[in-house]
Image 1 (cartoon, rainbow, N blue to C red):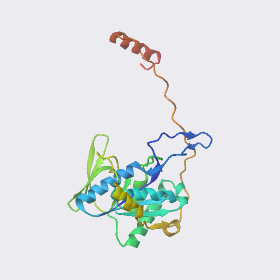
Image 2 (cartoon, rainbow, N blue to C red):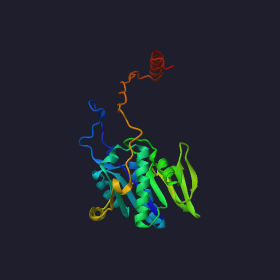
Image 3 (cartoon, rainbow, N blue to C red):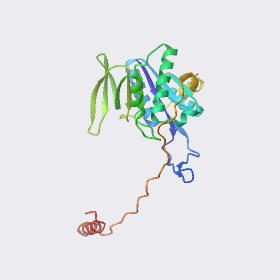
Image 4 (cartoon, one colour):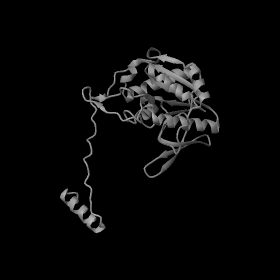
Length: 261
């Protein structure tokens, strides 16, 4: 089975990021760029699937020059191939524009490699914009089946069995290839690279395409006009009473005062 993971590079969300008050945008000075967390979950799920069932795992990134490191990191943790569609203009894409470029890129790669992808995985959302829309839009562009928020994928009969995460548990969905699936957080973490795989990934030759080879970059139909920080939480009131009954009474009085009850 040929599996492709669409990987986005995002600011490292393990670092606290604040807004630039003048530019009204996140201040990313000194913040590293990394592969989107949900995309790394999709990659780990795909690599485990490949190890269990055979096949090939590839990764695709659409972005600017600095996205190359993210692809090489993916190669160091199990991906066998990487493809890079490079153009600075892609930084301003909205969700539907991203889906357009990804779909055209996939068609181009399939034509050049003379192979079809059976399964295309995306993270269920990116940790920067958190739209959660690209996967569904990509499936529509490609005309494939679609399942969101997968945490497990297995071969079943002539198709695939997908465990789709829900608020109550998960649904078991039957799916035929080709298909697009977005991936949530499974019950395991992505693997770490070894020194050997890191060294090999640095030497990897990654096929690179320009925007001119893929198609016209369409103007974004949706754009973010301003970022707003959430309001700071007010300090709470600490009840000092040591006696349980008095503490409960004090809490009830405070809630009445605040018109919470």
